[in-house]
Image (tube, rainbow, N blue to C red; front, top):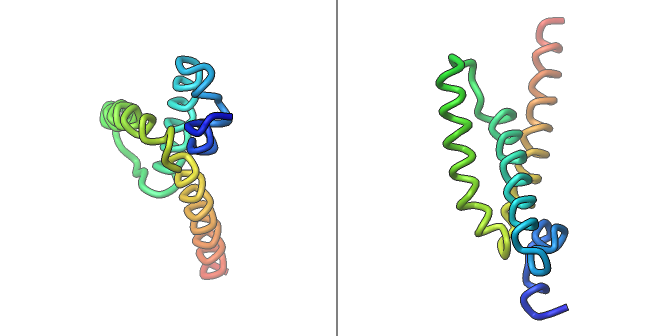
Length: 103
């Protein structure tokens, strides 16, 4: 393992960006996009018309292309996973509290 591969983030190492840069970057980009969409849905999504929703997802995908380059050496994907866990716990607790108040 070279010195550069040791400094890569978990997802970049998982997809072997150092050995297969083209395929690895596409897989990393797909992972970042999926994690960003889940994070958006859990924490920030509101009911919008379909065209506005499509614009948001296109801009989200464009922003993720920049994040993908950072994600090679920085823990961007890992941070998104942590955000998903925190927002998921928040949503579960919020729904439990809502049910408790209704009962």
